[in-house]
Amino acid sequence: MDDAQLLRYSRQILLPQVSLTGQEKLLQSKVLIVGLGGLGSPVAMYLAAAGVGHLVLADFDYVDLSNLQRQIMHSSAELGQHKSVSAQKKLQALNPNVQITLIKQRLKEKYLKNIMSDVDVVVDCSDNFATRFALNAACVRSGVALVSGAALRWEGQVAVFFPAEKNSPCYRCLYDDNDEQTETCSEAGILAPLVGVVGSIQASEVIKVLLNIGDSLCGKLLLFYAYTGKWRILKLHQDPTCPVCTLK
Image (cartoon, rainbow, N blue to C red):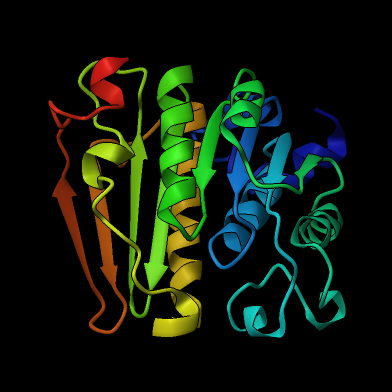
């Protein structure tokens, strides 16, 4: 770590739970972020700012005017541009030391298998069950930690799954194929700062997982109700009939 990096990350290095050793570990880490919208924006920006050395950014969509109310990584200048390209420009301006790899297509099962081998954590910032289930299955197969987030209207949730740990639940234990996403942000609406709150929590959970510090949300579901300002934590258990994690 050079002098410029020591200064850049100095406030974080001051934390005894992080220290110089932890910061160096962050610099050597690789994180896959799936979805570069409302949740992916704060996740990617905070992880880049915090010094996670390699970010893999996955999104097949393009910047639309309706995104700009909440997707703070993009601006009016990037309208019509691929979200991954727009994100790369913002993150490199924020921290040019971070290595960035772009994935501009949908993450099919075969492709996921290829990229999971050297990823330390996967952050699910997607907006549909199909992608969430695919990411969960890939994480269970590879033993990679999954940090999941979701937000709609005034409500958000975050959970962390450690498939490498025995009897740890997975995302499929929480939701099954009968759960259908009947509404989207374009139909139900969403409060702009809500995704910032949820995404920031996801980013902090990623750092705790990478450094193996703190009390993570593994085995828990954190719920935030922005309209009332209330928080809840629910305990999650492995579903003995889960077709994904009980067969690993």
